Length: 156
Image 1 (tube, rainbow, N blue to C red):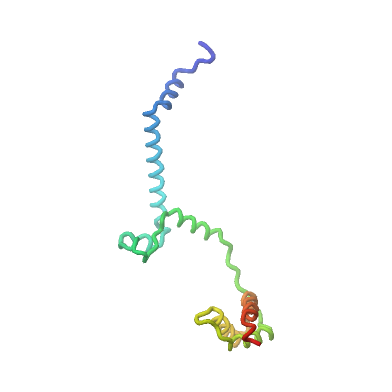
Image 2: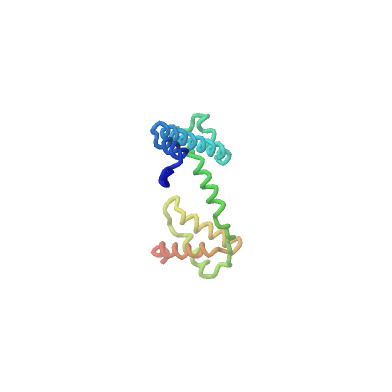
């Protein structure tokens, strides 16, 4: 027996792989396995979907625009995982308002704002918040400085 000769079993296996009919059967089997895995994933992730996304198709609202359908369970799984890895919320630290903060708020309250603007709500809410507790956060203080600069022409 020569050294370069292949064993008969290996030769048969090689012919099976090279056979186009066998290759097509393997491909079909592979595609079926992938489809079944996707179905199983969707079935396993159904409990993650919110109730309105899960029953929207049954109620006929899926394409009406009232309910945004969930494209795939994988997106829900991704959002659930990203929520798990999110940093914990840090409690806001409130500090006593300085005299400058109180003066700035007193200047902003009588200003004229655009209708429905957040600036008007912020100024009025901060005014009532200082009347009750006298404390503001650092973010509120920074935004207050921005508003004083924005409405500086009305303040003067």
